[in-house]
Image (cartoon, rainbow, N blue to C red):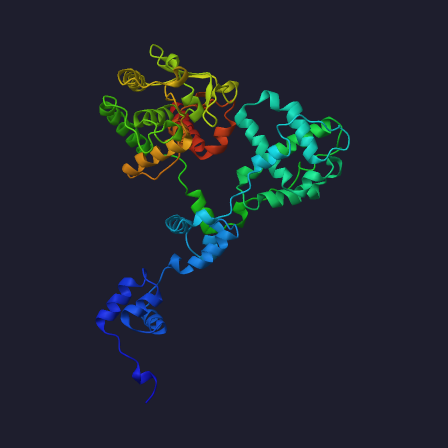
Length: 462
């Protein structure tokens, strides 16, 4: 008797089980349920034309090894042929990120290499590490904010992690610079590499001006960045990451919050999670929602919103005055704005003024104390960006809107204004930009639409 003739026939209920579970169970699990071999299950599935998606848990051991080796999620997902989101969900469920090697703290490397120490070395034959220190301390440190100093620390710490740091600046050529950018850009986004490169260009420009080198080796290097290694599908997914709210979503969030304030600004402070303010998660929901609402209605930066005081509300002119920021990263208090262009008055509508006045009354009625007359920094603690982002995420999820961060409310505000024909110079001034160049770069597609509409208006007029 032939081997083919003794094969067990498939009953209808077995095929139904196979069809219903082929995308959810492993072949081995289906085989165990049906008391069949794995090869029989695979063969029948093929005959039925079933398509089985990858089940990530089948690759658990492989994922663990790649995580332990420091592979990032994009690389792991590509290797397994699964989506990054599916991989992220699985890793979060299995706490696999906890075994990932902790990334190098470039800030700590910078401090260890003397970024905050007084320089003691001579000025002749300096290597890149020494020159960067001298350049930063002599020409930069005294005129920049703490948040900007942190950027210099990151750049310096990164440079110190590469052999180029120990090369004499006069000996560094374009090839050395390119090799460094190749190394740095392999796993970083295009904008991150551009920003990093600009620090190094400025550093070496001043080395030329001071006569320590005859050339700037970073002036004409070829940009290398992570997006260049992504597949078309990955690039499409990256482009489709939500950058702002749509107009309908903006309107939905705005009115939801206005109705929310109607009842909740009559209630005692509502707090989530830990009762200790220093944890950053126990900020009153009324305070958190007001921060989100002001970001939505003004496009102001997070630090600028935290820097608002009771005196900054002008109910007669219907404006909010921004002339300072709040150092939320260290909780040290007021600091200067990002630049002089950031000092401005932002016109707001009467609804915003009315809600702010009710909020002020709420603070008074429920004796919610704030630091240094601020509107949103509660006494005894600090406000963290991560906390507000979590509250914003919960708010959007409740409205069935894809999550975005608080900073993207700034993008939303700009998008809404530009899409509705507000002149770009007015938008730039409102957001505290010194020029419209950044807006033109980020919102060029919206500006083209606005220009087209403007041209149609001209044709109707003439």
